Amino acid sequence: MADQLLSTVTDYHSLPENYVRPEDQRPRLAEVVSDAHIPVIDMSAPDKSHVVSQIGHACRSYGFFQVLNHGVPVELMLKMLVVTLEFFRLPPTEKAKLYSDDPAKKVRLSTSSNIRKETIRNWRDYLRLHCYPLEEYVPEWPCDPSSFKEVVSAYCKEVRQLGLRLLGAVSLSLGLEEDCLVKALGEQGQHMAINYYPKCPQPQLTYGLPAHTDPNALTILLPDPDVAGLQVLKDGRWIAVDPLAHAFVINIGDQLQALTNGKYKSVLHRAVVNPEKERISVASFLCPCNYAIISPPERLISEGSPAMYRSYTYEEYYKKFWTRNLDEDPCLELFQS
Ligand code: OGA
Ligand code: NI
Image 1: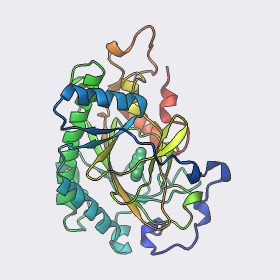
Image 2: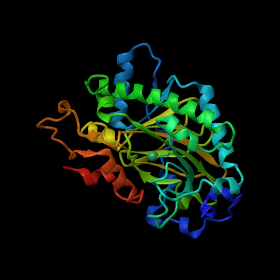
Image 3: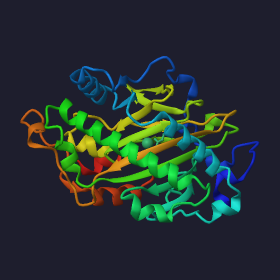
Image 4: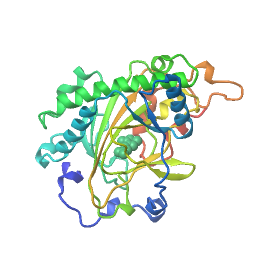
């Protein structure tokens, strides 16, 4: 089964047929806007209330922003990128040991997104890990490359702290107590998708990841510093995100859209692939505790702004998400009240 992985083959001269999208689903790369930008926020700026209002604006209008001076050591970000490439360069026999297409597994190397549900594949391999609490999961993580466990666990801890700070700022930006969303999300889980997009012979016919929203609460993406590929939907057009040195790309997931009663948006985004260069990215997902009841605070519901979604538990949502194909309609629509 591990022969499904793209990263075990050295070169593709043409796109295999099961990756080719029908004409009306292709990325239309010529129409992508390259000179618009998602907001960039310097988290170390001395005026904290200004930082909060910038975050609020970004969450309302884009659902996406980049953060600089975010507190995660730059050296650790670089180590994370290095260990990612080392991992995907391991020999096929090593990778085969980790291969699985079962979304329930807590450590798995897989390809595309959910091959049990898909008819058309995506040009991506990924290593998916559960990361919190670390002591519970690290023993099952890959032992190769030899620095993997140490680098990735240090990285996960730092990213979690950043995520919690951001959730505090998001709460404040809505006029809520700083700990309001963190409390609502309960003891949050943390997952990671370490993505590898090989260079692709015909990027105009396929995706690394098709348009989707993230099913979790908040996503912290470490993009490849050298190769762009992430695109965000804004006012009906796809905007290419230019990776800034040492920045993270942050986005609101479905659970924050539900918890904010739709005030903040879980926005469609996608990854396109490149004919000349492979691309990597590391997505960290903060996820509500399975038993957290996703229901907005009273202050965000009013006569003019009635509850948009019924209450549900994250467990219920997550199960629904994985029974579906990534490029179906957004999963949150199934929970409208
Ligand atoms: C994801 C994602 C984008 C990227 O993993 O959910 O949107 O640039 N990744 O890899
Ligand atoms: Ni995503």
